[in-house]
Length: 78
Image 1: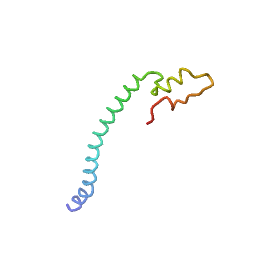
Image 2: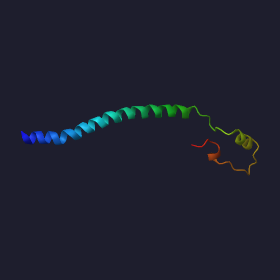
Image 3: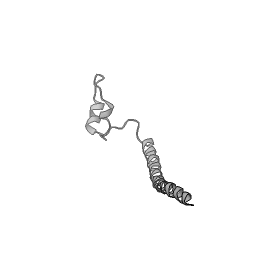
């Protein structure tokens, strides 16, 4: 009987902690899944080539073929 109680004592605590962490993790996974779905929808409605900077838009419209505009200049900093 003492051996059984020892095994339950040794194994029960890790099982309880694992269960607690899995329950918390499930909630975070649900939130992350919703955020990923929302991000996907936002990406789908983006225009093909957004220009965020109005001065850059003027540069792009009046640029000569020799000028190079890097993609990093077209998007806002993260």
